[in-house]
Image (cartoon, rainbow, N blue to C red; front, side, top):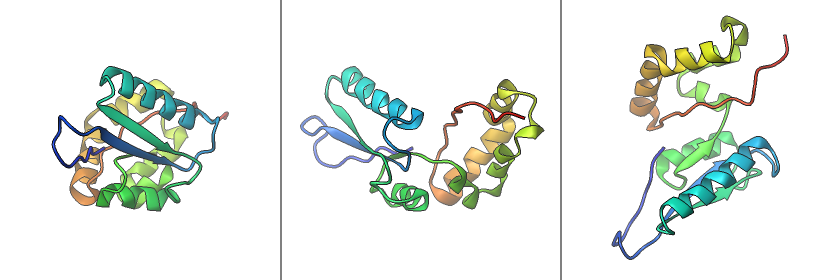
Length: 137
């Protein structure tokens, strides 16, 4: 995730544009809006997050490419990251993992670190993974 700002830092509110395709009321949008509230409060208004939900910033590919060129600073996306590093496909094969804790350990361990390094180098992206739960087997 990148934070882009221009002009005198003290005189200008920093704005983070956060893009996602999810519709209002979904967990992703609710969490993004909560992030925006916390950011504004913790920064005492020096920073603001504009949540562009429901595809206002485009589809997932548009959103990720927007991050790469700096028109967006954050996103909540899913499978599109596989286009930038095929190793991200391991998350689609949920039966490779015992449970959510196992996924977390893999993605926060050496494998996740390697993926993050490649994404930073190839795509100028950094990932932070969250889960809305696993599918029923």
